[in-house]
Image (tube, rainbow, N blue to C red; front, side, top):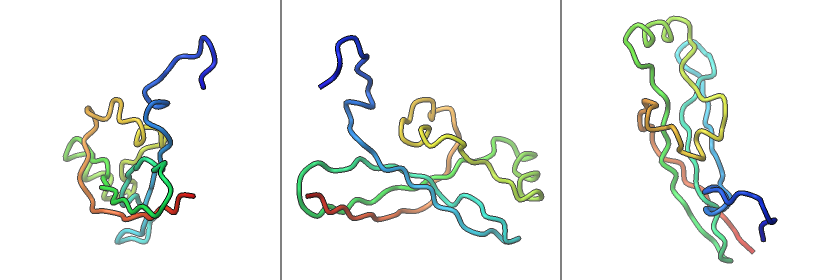
Length: 107
């Protein structure tokens, strides 16, 4: 139940989500982002398996790509809400980066 006067947002209509951030070493041994993804948590009791499509943000220019390769600093999100909401992501360049499978045991 929501309180009187509290705004009903789209996030409250969709339910809880799990945001996944996967990191791993690059060629130089630096930890870099390997992928981001999000999935809604199921409400019904039982065992549920979900496959999450992962993506990584990309540099917008060749100069930025070259600079990030030399420095070892690749683009990444600082706020996990960007991954969960999807709002404003249409202007962010991303590349598909595989899948992660997650299992839920809901009681």
